[in-house]
Amino acid sequence: MMLDPELRKEIIMENYLNPVNKDTIEDKNYLKVNTNSETCIDNIDLYILFDGDVIKDLHFNGEACAISTSASSIMIKLLIGKTIKEAKEIMKNYYNMVHEKEYDENLLGEACCYEDIHKQQNRIGCATIPWRGLEKAFEEYEKRLKEAN
Image (cartoon, rainbow, N blue to C red):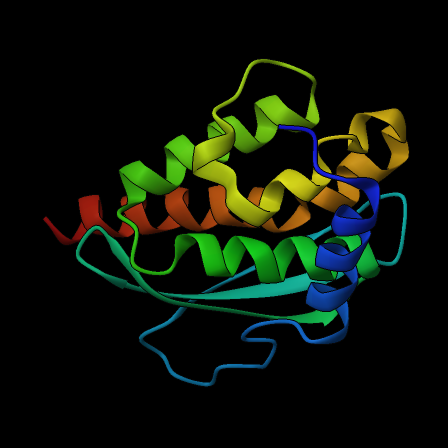
């Protein structure tokens, strides 16, 4: 499903100018992870509240370009209420999309606005920053669960 270029731009700009859950969370129940870019200024913190294996809440804050900010906002909308397993499946499809591999567009919703990002290789990093942070969060959460048992 190739989105119309104007619609893609509209989705990105809407999520950049009015990002969902862009704030700092001071609650110790949230797992905080940092993710950044080695090639630009993008540096964001993710705040994730898990309820068992469900992503109950998700926020982000930091300094980021339009692509990283909008990708964070879109990711948040996609993942709140999903299980870790569902989120990992969405993540796999997202990575496949940005790297021009086969993916299920039905899982990605608005995130399909990045379906052409591979044409600008340097922007793939921007579009994947929040997802890389999420990977770190899952690793940390799973590690904590093992230590608790």
